[in-house]
Length: 306
Image (cartoon, rainbow, N blue to C red; front, side, top):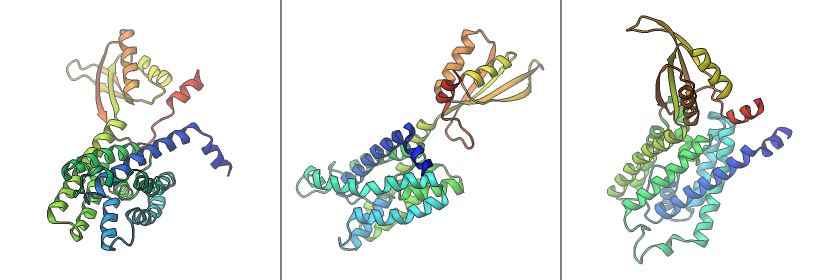
């Protein structure tokens, strides 16, 4: 109980709660306004729910079907992925149905379409594009805080964890299987649109995820390596690795430092090197995934040290 109260009292908890709520509001709106009216079946649990709801003759609503499927997948998330991911995804999954019900009651999609049509944007391709962009952004934000929109994302996260696929490819693989269920209610053309949408969703998720998680892998060769090392450890509060290297042209022995830095860290490091006139050979490349320890509380530790 004390541990739970300590978590609830942290700033991190409330910030992530707000982020999850906003992200799920956007994702729910994307489903309600772009999938439900046009009956586009993208490779998501929402898409599968539309199929099952249609097959039931409307006896079970789409929000209810989403709730039932998510409940089953949440059990898998808790045991196969982790308690934190499972707990956060429980929250995001539980608020989907209420949000969609509120949208249906207060801002029904029927008020946004022309008479005799079932597309908010007037064309299924535009509906597809709007849905994919909104959903992918929400997925990437939630993945960055170890959460998900539930449903398909749980399957994708399991594939990502155990088969080590990129998260975007995991979304596409799991989604393509679900998307094929649309043959039960939609013509071939609509299913193809859904498959294309699922593929684009995976690409866009990878793009947003890379953008949010992008780090710099910095390699520095300098005779003043100890000075640079001290700055990285004591000022940037990051770790680094040192290697003995030999110059292929000069045949001189030197030390290479390697460090993983955020964009802000890298900018501070370059400022330090330039300001102090340190002679160094530096290369930097982008890294989108890090496995192992990554200190996300650098600022808190820095403030504590001061």
